[in-house]
Image (cartoon, rainbow, N blue to C red; front, side):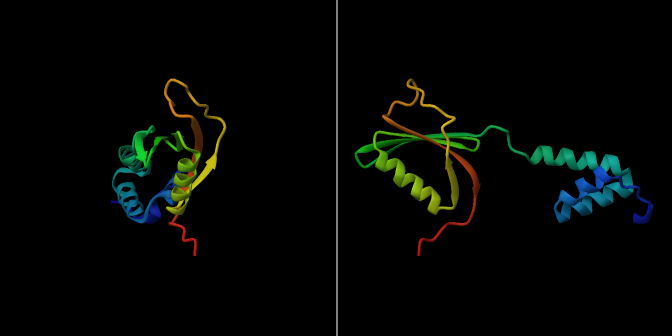
Amino acid sequence: MKNLIDLDILDDEYNFFCILADDEKIKFLFDALTIGVSDSMLNQLYKLKQDTPSPISYSSEDLNVGPHRLCICIIDNVMTLNSDSLRVIRTFVRKFFRDGFILVRTNRIKKEKEFDVYKYFKAFNIYRTSIPICEN
């Protein structure tokens, strides 16, 4: 088995090493000493690929909110809201914001008459999540 001093790590391999979590760094170094740096990098990439969820996530729900209806559709980082009441949409957006989600309105997504059956339609990009927000 080699020593750490004997390893030849190139710039790309070092950059990859820097983005790994601490426990993954240890596994990377152990594999680099036993099977080589490039094979160690391939092993870590294979593990990352297995842990990564499918690229497209989809969720849709149609809710009763008092006398009104609200349809929520989330595809990857885009959320669309379709309702028969603007007040319900505004209330839901405020609740989402208070729960820690950053929403930015987008006009890139248009209402599809055959799928979005309710009168009001709004689409938002979900840029990131943070801790819940307290209004006090």
